Length: 236
Figure 1: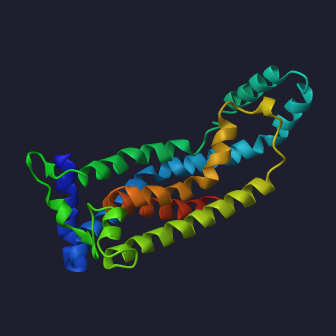
Figure 2: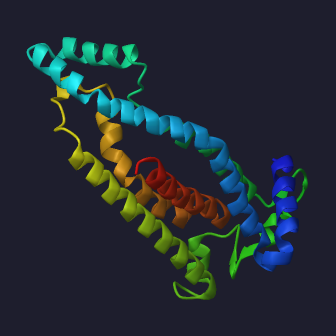
Figure 3: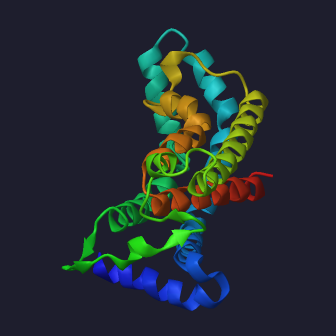
């Protein structure tokens, strides 16, 4: 944790001439971009996997006709097809999972008052008027929704809402372009639930931004916006 704290401090020191009091916030945005760049090859692989999965749909439709009266055999056949073609039905999940450690590091880093036995100086940093270690509840109790800190959160909420809406509409268009979903028996176990929930994940980010320290919220907002831009490029 202390090593990670020093990394954030060093990045903030480098950015101070440009961003002054918000240098640590800029460092978090830069750190998030570096994490996303590292994960990008996996995101590209996930995009290829999803395209390959879409290409399997005609063959899955044939299997559905062949095993219409045997749902268990149909499910096994679909799984075997994915294995044979080396296509993961959960393409796209891994890049998101690999980002969780960075988020939790920031969460813990800006939640504690001490680091390595000393005071946590990172809590003194701000994004404009909002402390990076503070939460939306703190902003509401210190100036209200339209106070100086509250306006910072309103800006973050606006970005997340815009990105979430764009992601949801894109997911709807993608779903509409696909063949009609198969009967419940041919679904890969767990895939249907993932498919239903995925378009709404960005909206859940609104709740997370409201309850976690601002530093972690800034990571989430930056990563969510990056994901939207990345998916637009990979799936155009």
